[in-house]
Length: 144
Image (cartoon, rainbow, N blue to C red; front, side, top):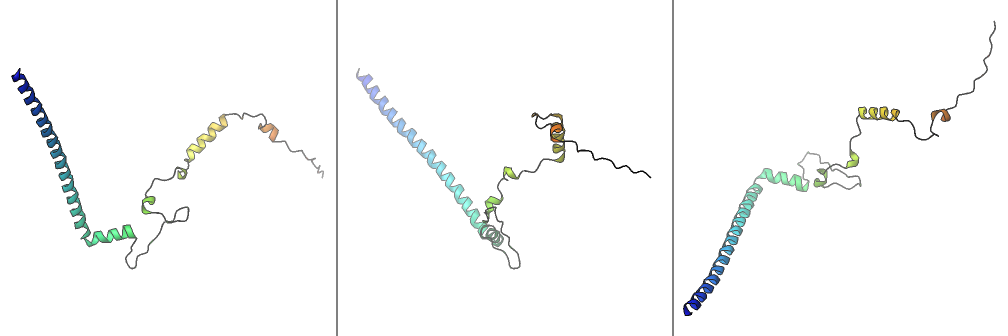
């Protein structure tokens, strides 16, 4: 009986120490992942710093972000429908569905053919009632 109690105590202590060991391993793997992400972020920032040391990159960013132009160049500002200048992001957005191109001429022509095939539904719109024959004038007789 004493042997079973001792084995039970050993099993409980071993389980608790094993749980602590597994938690530490999980914490270490989280820390390693965090370190890897930090190293990647540092490498990206170093690349960005090297880009900013290039005068051509600085000039491009000044043109793009601040709208700077070189002496002798002409700058244009795109104005929206509301009269306000458009942001650069807005100029690259998708076109409005209202600005779609009109249908091609053959689509219009085919629509006319289909409309000619369908008789009008209202009796009032019949051509015989809308169009009246003009009254005939008397003809003058010309005799020599």
